[in-house]
Amino acid sequence: MIKILFICHGNICRSPMAEYVFKDLAAKAGLSACFYVASAATSSEEIWNGVGNPVYPPARAKLAEHGIDCTGKQAVQLTRTDYDKYDYLIAMDSANVRSMYRILGGDPKGKIRRLLDFAGSGRDISDPWYTDDFEQAYRDVSEGCRALLAALREEYRL
Image (cartoon, rainbow, N blue to C red; front, side):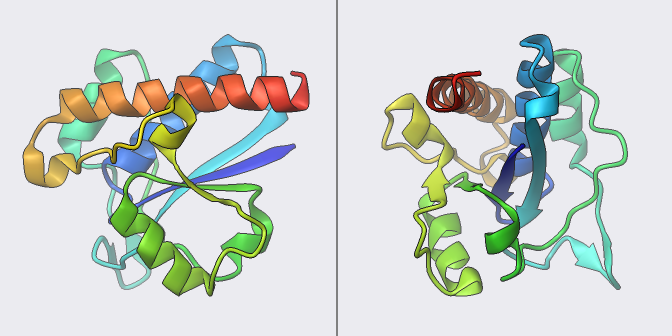
């Protein structure tokens, strides 16, 4: 099983979008059993007394527009032990990558990548929490997830 962890700042917008878009793509391809997919935050801002906030309503609504349900998802924070648990640690932007290096203590196995790197783009996925552009975030996440799935299908001959 290939284990993927999507990461953004708060785990309420972009990384849950990526988690659920990727799960949806894998299911439609008949490959759900090949993957374990989750998401996490580099910060603890959306976690209170050990309980994470749910997916931000506009992000949840954008997923629902595409028939994707993220009910029950709560923000969790990335931990150092996640490095050994996952095969791929996929960041939404460069700031996430810097935070991941700090939290994880480096990347000796080359597991950390940005999502749009798989699509051949050097772009970050802008944070809709600040831009309020959930449509663009969804399009970028979808593009990256499709490219990631294609790369994994090729690499693992799925």
